[in-house]
Image (tube, rainbow, N blue to C red; front, side, top):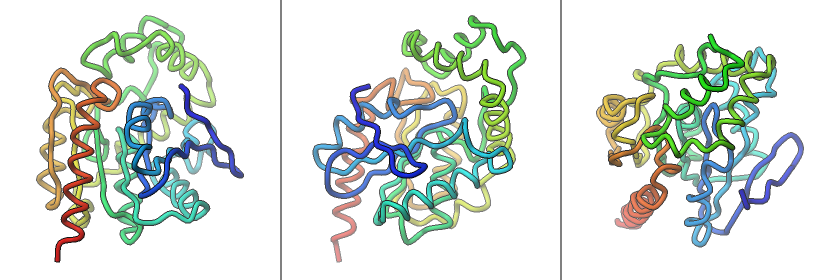
Length: 258
C-alpha cells in the first residue's frame, strides 16, 4: 500500500486529496488498503479519508456496531467534517447506516457495498479451525468470486489475526453484534441519496440482501457487478469507480437543481 497513514490522538487514518469529503469505512477483516483503487481514482477531485477502525483493540464492552459508530462520530468531530459522502463495505456499511441515522445532518450521500445490517454469512462468528492455514485461506477466498484476489499477503494477515486470542474475542463480539443489530425497521428513515453497489456473486451478503436494501431505502439506486464477490472495490475497481463517479455527478446535479 502506498498510502500514508497519519496519527492524531487515538486515531489512525488516511487523508488524501482536497474538496468534498468521501469518508470510507472498511469491514471486519478489512484494511485501509482495500480502498486503494478508490483513493487513487477519487483523490484527484475529492478529499478521501479512511479512518482505521479499532476492531482488534477496542474495549470488549464496546466491541460492536454501536461502539464503532461512536468511534466514527468522535473522529468526524475531531476532524470537523461535514457534508459527508459516506462509503461502507461489509461491516463498514453497517456502521455507516447507524452513523447516518444518528447524524443525518452530517451525511449528504450514502454508498453501501456488500453491507451487513440485514443478513450476512460471516466468517467472524466462530473459528472452529483456528490455526488451520488452509481453512483460513479457503474462508478468505470465499469473500471473492475469483479466489486469486485473496493474495498470500491477505491470507497471511487474516491468519495472524485469527491466531490472536484478544483479536479473536473482539471479532466474534463484533460479528455477533452485527448479526443482532438488524436495521430493517430503521433504514426506511434514511432519505439521503444512496448508492448500492453489489457483487452479483456475493456469498456473504447475497444479491437478495441488495434487493432488500433497495426496497427499504426509497432514495436508493442498485447496481450489480458480474463475476464479483463481497468486495467490489477490490475485485473490480474500475467498474466500481465508474458507477460511483456517475452517482456523485448525478446527485451533485440533483442538489443544485431548484
